[in-house]
Length: 115
Length: 109
Image 1 (tube, each protein chain N blue to C red):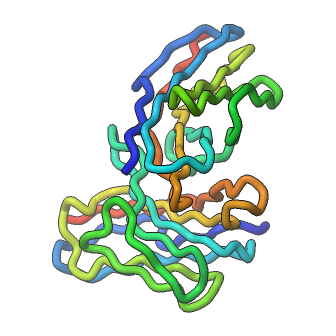
Image 2 (cartoon, rainbow over the protein chains, first blue to last red):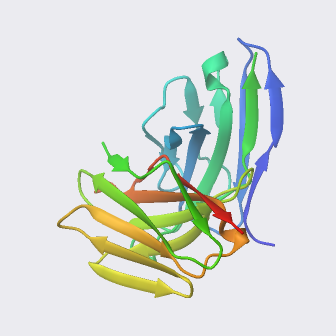
C-alpha cells in the first residue's frame, strides 16, 4: 500500500542523546514536511522540503535538522535531545500546490519521550 | 506567520448537525483545509476550499469566505465514529500549511 512510513513508532531517549526519526514515502511527492503535535498547540511545522536537495525552516526549527538527499526520504535529526522535544512527530508529503489540491498525506507518527 | 482560531471542544448528539468555525489571519492565502484526526492516529484529509463558497462532500461540507478570513466545517447526521479532532489548516503565500489547535468533537448517543 502506497504511503508514508515513519520509524521508530515510539522511542524513549535520554536527554543529550542524538536521535534521527526516519521518514520514507513512495508516492513520488515533491514536497515533504515534519510537524510536531503537542496537546493544546496543534501541529507545528518544524522543517519542510519543496523538492529534493532543498530544505526550509518552519515555525519551530530550533534543535532540529533535516536533509533531503532524494525524493523519497526526509529524516529529522535531534542533535542533542532535550525534554521539551517530547512530542508526537508527524512526517507528511504532498504534491506541490497547483497539482490537485496539494493536500498533505501523513505518516502514522513517532512518539518521542526525552527524559 | 499565521493566526488560526477554532473552538477547543464541541459536543453533539448522534444524528444532529455540528458546525465548527475557523477564523484565520495569514500572510498570503493559497487554500484552506480541514483534516480529521482520531485519537492516536494520523490526520486525514477531509476538504479543501480555495474560492469563496460551499464545498459539499457527503455528510461533510466546508465553507470559505476569504474577505472575512472565515471558514466552517459542517458535519451532518452525526455518527459515533465522527468523534474526533477536526483541524483547520491554512496554506500561506509560501505554500506552507499551518494548523489550528483543533476542535475535539464528542458525539453522544
